[in-house]
Amino acid sequence: MIQITPQMRILLAVEPVDFRKGIDGLAAVCRQALAADPMSGALFVFRSRRGTALKMIVYDGQGFWLAQKRLSRGRFQWWPPGEGKASVGLDAHQIQLLLWNGDPSQAQAAPMWRRLGTGN
Image 1 (spheres, helix red, strand yellow):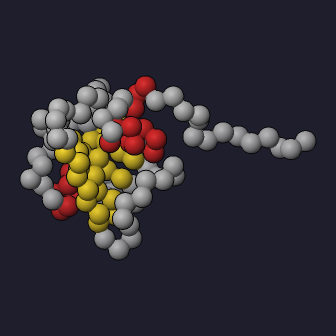
Image 2 (cartoon, one colour; image 1 turned 90 degrees about the horizontal axis):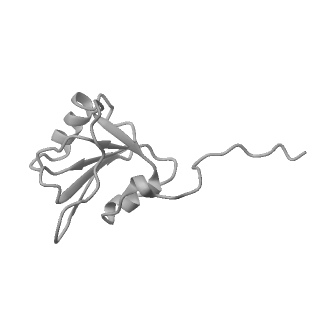
Image 3 (spheres, one colour; image 1 turned 90 degrees about the vertical axis):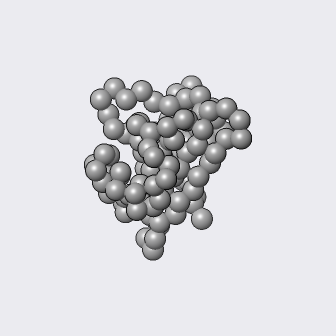
């Protein structure tokens, strides 16, 4: 089961991919286009060319998980601009918004990490 945790590294591939690709094809995209290790435990998110579906892969230590979400109507409204980068990092709450076709860039949440007081 794919469990998205706050500690998880999440990378969105900016460029759309061919959705005929399976786990091996998407892992190759991770290595070649994103310069990332698909077996690192990070969650990799890909968008179809038409923007109607997302695929995610993650390695759990034994093997890969592959998940796909296809919208019944419409397209995913938000996707990050390339700006010369192959991938963009997201936080756990932002990927949850994206999966519900929200805009992660507008998420208003507390900082993920903050220094705790020394308790003086």
